[in-house]
Length: 595
Figure (cartoon, rainbow, N blue to C red):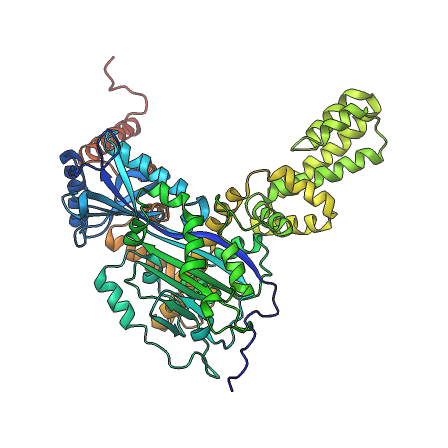
């Protein structure tokens, strides 16, 4: 007798907390005036420019920034190409593989958008921005954009991660199904695998004879092979983001009602070019518009988890299980925002952004609310039509005080005293460290009533949640990198002291250790001919905080990018001033000067 199935839905609330595109690859081809690809190769002038940039990178034996930007971030070029691609360009948001366009059906560029960019601004905006950039490179020559690969997914809270009969509960058109205890690798998630790479990945993922043991839980379910035209995958996303340091997913989940602790599982479908072509889907924007239809096919026709509690000898006739119904519903909206925002979590996300980015402004506004109450307590007479304006003002006290000043002399005196006190508080805040300001802002906001807090957040953060989400993702990625750097620095610092001579590391407290380390860094930079300020700006360029043009301006400002002729002119001017100063010293009254 078959043992009863374990419950597939756990005690946690079942709900999708995210849906969208995690990977998107687009092929670009030159086109005729009618918009259809014509097979023309890359213009010679652009190819020569790319070769010039690449030659510089080869000379320096490292990627070098070029005179082009994508979304305000400088692109860099690698010293060498790869396979059929002659030039490889990249920044934090996109990777571009370019060729002469004489192979691959006339494809001169393949773009791979970064996951964080797709979740920040959406695939359509990312694609259209790049398309405009490429058209400008080609002097407004028409181009055709062909979708090469797309990964569509939903993140689900409430997926039961205990033992389950996965081999019989799923009904699929795929032949190969396997379970493994590891999460997908970064290479799998990036997509764009060659047949050789796909075969290598499949060989590295052996089929497990047992899904789970006492000490080994399933982490990934694969449906199909990595070289398939369509592949499904279910995996532990909470564990994967810890390993890949993608904790910036958490603000997205929280805004959609994640409880903050439950394990999130991702259901993902990776759809490649041949599958799209079979459905007559080619153009990139056309594929993006068809995402709800693709999701419906993938979750209703290609793969389903069925309810085995209903007796039927034909599993294909069984209805989808409750958990799979939640998966199916996640992608039904045509605007790629099917997951309803949790309004409470949305407000928390906005408040977090305000505290992190504008703590001083937030504190000022909290005290402005307090000022509003105090003026009312002081019984300053104000007309109702004036008060009605205050409820519409984004900042409270300037408007309130303006009316108070103009109403009566007693009111003016009282309001002036209160205003001076508020300005003094604001000025005192300016001297406080940023982290302390954030703590103070957090404490002050917690003292507000829910209604007042809601009004305050609505005034200070009226923008769409997509902008808030993009900001939170950016900050989360930045802080994760900083934390990683601090962790590495702490380890290197102790190693430096351990390897230092006894006279330097006899009693290595933190301050002494930093002095020794800074001395080593100074000597290293001096040996390499590096300027510390310039190296910091180079890192800012690599992280996308500044552009190559801004870096060059800083170099010129600090005299780091002067030609030999410029330095000779500077030296000549210094010699002239030095000689003039010596003349003044030897002849202070100017008796030898010729009039």
